[in-house]
Amino acid sequence: MRKNSLSTIEDLSNQQIEDVLELAGEMQQDLRACYGLASGYLMASLFLEPSTRTRGSFESAMKRLGGQTITTADAATSSLAKGETLADTMRVWSGYADLIVIRHPWEGSARLAAEYATVPVVNAGDGGHEHPTQTLCDLLTLKKEHGALEGLRVALCGDLKNGRTVHSLTLALLRFGAQIIFVPGEGLDLPDYLKQRIVSEYGVPIERVSAKDMDLGALFEGREGDSAFLNAVYMTPTQPHQLAIHQQDALVKFASKGRPLALYMTRKQKEREGSGAPGAYPKVNARIMSSSSLSKAVVMHPLPRVDELATDMDQDPRSKYFEQAWNGVPVRMALISLILGLKPWRRATDTAPGKPQVLVAAEGLRCVNPICVVNKEPQNAHAEVVFYSKPSPWFLCKYCERQAPAEYFIPSGQTHSRPIKELMVSSMDQLSRLRFLPDRQSAIAAGFPPTLSEHSKVIEVKG
Ligand code: NCD
Image 1: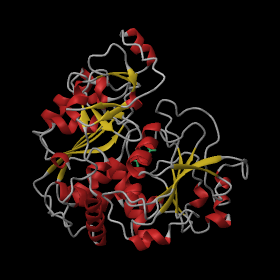
Image 2 (image 1 turned 180 degrees about the vertical axis):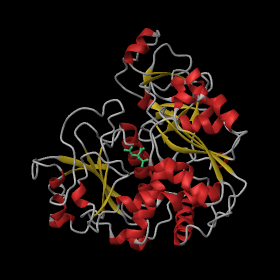
Image 3 (image 1 turned 30 degrees about the vertical axis):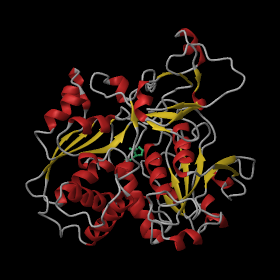
């Protein structure tokens, strides 16, 4: 973890995730038994977007550990409303608390906050980007259900485009070798940058599967059995993530395609751009769940629910959403204890947590996401991008992880630009000295029109 902060689920290694869940399970046995562990410590909870469960359970967790909390739950009452920067806010709060938990509408805000705070920062939701601590609650729920994190098969349903819980959960599930079926509402598919990461980092293709074949057509009321298509990622024992600690047996057991173990429902994120459109949306109710294909599936939801999850499921033993919310207290107790060093990490983490990032600050590479912290607070953001080499070079904003467009590059000393797929990188230094162009039009406008060469050749960049 960078400075013990948690801005994305990728900041935790698989071993650290296992540690948090194991400790959470122990603490859950008796929530009063750890009282006093955090005595003398203070947690600031800065919630600049609405919250019930995340803030409530973080504060409950800190108080159950005997620590104290200070809350700002309304941007209008803090100096952010006077135009104070996030960077300054973090510098100031670092002198008031030992740990900062922040929810903020800007994507990538938690990462920037962690760069400026001198105490650990935990992301409690940064716009539509990530919500790593919700993922820890989701994983604890799944682990209790399945007995292990390996070999899970989960259907992620609803607003996959803007649902930050789904983004963090997807990344975590893949690292433990899960099979995922994406069941989006109409126009609310998983963002391209995440799909591209799945293909690039895990080497697994995203397959198109028919909802009918997956026995999931029933989730779309009134469209049962029609030709709706879903996306699925099937990890097999030959495609484990390099950092995953897989139990091969578990993977083998679930390697064949089949029914999901859990349906993870989400609400339409109406407050985010592009989520308001009407259209078919997956729903769950007692009638739908009576279908034989779903008889064994548990139902999860990060809550709040709107109308995608009917109350007639509340008494059903397969419904796990309230348990999932309650898991928030022991999970956050464990996380706080580990981050503050009040409990030791148990599993040795010899590899760097997450995938090591190759950061580049080359000309022409910039984030185009208007709600990214890079564009909201450019004076304090370090505008670097993460470099990916597969399938051909592409770049993600370091903060919000949206794709930074780069279709062309200018080889040094040349008068024309060339398509990015022709770039073969062998030196990161050299990469930072290159100039990139987002599209053909800007290449022409910059005076470096793309080459007309019929024989495209690979340009090797050497340091
Ligand atoms: C989620 C969130 O805030 O992203 N809620 C939560 O933290 N449990 C889900 C949502 O708001 O839809």
